[in-house]
Length: 307
Ligand code: MG
Ligand code: MG
Ligand code: MG
Image (cartoon, rainbow, N blue to C red; front, side, top):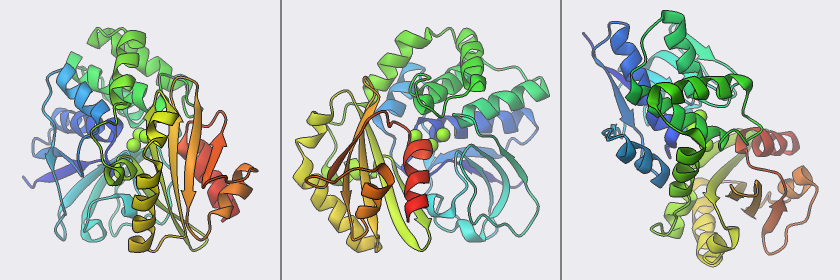
């Protein structure tokens, strides 16, 4: 049988890593033993915490894909956020919860998308549809992904389906969602080891609208001011990134997961789009965004609208 590569997006988050591993498990149950999970980058601290906690091995790093190789995408569909060489790969399946733009394939495929808070919630439904058993370790991975993507159900992206799935999965995994979830999210806020350049790449997405190429990066923290101690170095790293990638705009959102607010550093020739989008003023290249925690629902759409 031919090998199949399963992976989530670049700058992988917990959903991208765990959904690759869960999809590998699903493919085995469907009779495809040669499908294997990969990661497109370094694990973040939150994901490291999850894998250590349940003693699960991280997927291998995948740097690029050869022409005609078979792939399954989870937690993304945008080629800009995918593996190098994706344009020429043979995409078999996509399981995702993001907007679809400029997605094109040469052959028919299995595409499952739902506007839910997490890819794991869709994967859970696939187990249910097929009446497949969910092992405790797999349930633990999915519970972790849902907690991560929905910020413990506080994000506006969170749906009833996410809460129901996480509640069922946590029972199988024997997890106390509140306690484990808070510990897990806090592990992700430990940014002490990262350089400014690494910080802006930890969870970063390349996007496009109306000819505007822009980047929105996000980090979670329990204290925004802590992250801003490195503001100068972060701005320098952002400026270098803008120049290297020809971006019109780079927004670096620092999200306070305790109080559900964000502060963003915004740079680039088109930085004023953010002022228009959020109806505020940039001061010292910064803007405060009360109640904003979701890049997907509260940041990207308003930037696109104003681009
Ligand atoms: Mg993701
Ligand atoms: Mg996700
Ligand atoms: Mg995310």
